[in-house]
Each structure stands twice: as structure tokens, then as C-alpha cells.
Image (cartoon, rainbow over all chains, first blue to last red; front, side, top):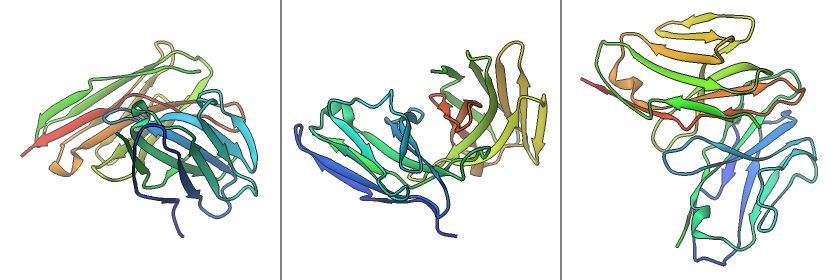
Length: 114
Length: 113
């Protein structure tokens, strides 16, 4: 079974630039999460979906971050105008859904904003 | 949302000894407590979990304890090996249907040979 796939693995930007991260969850997993993990810290939830619907995006900085999952499969997280404080690893995770508890994480995208 | 505190942030132990990591949570609705291990450059992987209907769970050298009254749970690694060196994260999840997971800040464990 293929795992959660993310791309790119690394991104380096200047402040003000835009970047998009892509995630392909495990086939059949209806719940998809985006986490931000600053260096030496735990993952912090940004947004999560059930199918194409956003369940919780209260921690997503809506002025610069956006996330979509239009067909309930792949997802894209976009930062419109990156700041140095956005430097972190962005982890995508998926779960089989209702009643299922294990998160399966992708390898992450390590973002550096100069 | 839920707040999870994890201590210590750094832990160094001698090979063969035990290592303990402690977490506390605030939301009494939290009922599922997984532990993830993250090795350098890798993604977090589930190693053990405990549900609120249990007080203790053991898988090989890993033991998790849950004290619901105190809102605390802990991971104990017995007979540590150098391969146990990694970041460890605790998490708490309130069961509200589709579950959210709140993570602690992590513990960097180093097992000294």
C-alpha cells in the first residue's frame, strides 16, 4: 500500500513569495490533515478535511494561507506571501475516517523563508 | 482547542535504563492518546496508543499509563537501546466524530551507549 505522498520535499523562498504544497493521501482515506511543524516542536494543526469539506480551519492564517481538496482526494496548501516565521516542515497526514484514529504522515515539505 | 504539555523537552539516558516522558491535557473530552516517534528526516510514526477506557498498555518495551482524573498520561521505554534515540510526541484527541489531534512539543531522547 502506498503511503502519503507529498511534494516538493524542500522549498526555499524569499519573503513575499508564494509557494504551494501538494499531498496525495492513502487511497480510501477520507480525512486529510495539514500540520505545520516548526523546528524542534510538535506538529500544529492548520486545517483538516473530510472528503472535500473543511472540518476545521480555525488555526489556518487565512490572510495568507489557503487549502483545498476539490475532489476529496489530493490536497494543495498554498502560502500567498511567505514570511520568515513560516519556516517549518509542512506535514500532510491522512486517516481512514470516522472512528479511525491512526494518522499516517507523509514525509513533509521543509520550507525555508529567507 | 485542546492544549497538551509534554516534558521533558530533552532526555538523555544510558543504554539499558528506562526513559519516561510525561504529558498532560486540559480537555476532559479527550479520550484517545497516541504516541508518535520521529527519527531525523523522517515523518512521525505511531508507536503505541491508549484509550480512555484503559489505564495501562504495554507493547514490548513500551508502556503507556493514563490517569484520567489528573489528565495525565506517560510513556515509559524500558531497557532503552540506541535505536530508541528520536523525537517522541504525545497527542490527545477529543472524540467528536472526525477527530482532531493535538500534539505536545516533543521530547528529544538520546540513548547513550
